[in-house]
Amino acid sequence: MTRNYETTFILSPVLDESGTEQQISKIEAAIVREGGTVTEWDRWGKRRLAFPIKRQSDGYYAFLRFEGTPDSIERLSETFKLDENILRHMHIVLDD
Amino acid sequence: MPKRERHGKFCRFCQDKVDKIDYKDEKRLLRFVTEQGKMIPRRVTGTCARHQRQLAVAVKRARQIALLPSIGRHYRRG
Image 1 (tube, chains in turn brown, purple):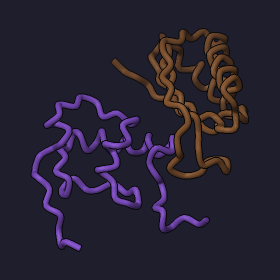
Image 2 (cartoon, chains in turn orange, yellow; image 1 turned 135 degrees about the vertical axis):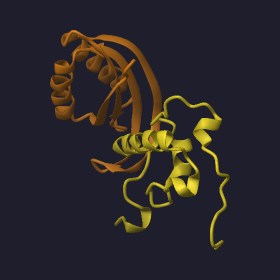
Image 3 (cartoon, one colour; image 1 turned 135 degrees about the horizontal axis):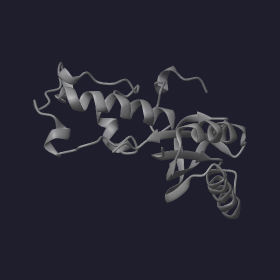
């Protein structure tokens, strides 16, 4: 059974434009590897964080909507947590 | 400081016919938390029970992704 998810990524502000693009395609690749289908990206760009994360006071916000299975989410989280360039990520289930 | 801020007794979300409160809409959420980032009770804001529950989830999500503060500015060091 697949579900629709929305994942927020806060990417490191240290990355330059091409670095950010690379990071985003890396995330997409990880999701495809887990059998998910990417629906849509929504990018906010650099923004001030409400509180510092990993000593950074800014972050690059990107929102991803995709379809995937619940157990793939867990594995993806592990990958994202290990990634130095992702300051934080959060999965949300879009039900209905 | 005014003794009590008088809000209209109606739910802002019902008025705007909001079906689901979006955690990314930080401008809107900011009006339902104090300066320190704590949630304002619905008896003050007039939010209906259904929307207050949704609001709580939205605020918690927004805190996770640093759109809303989780600690008030005054209590933070540095």
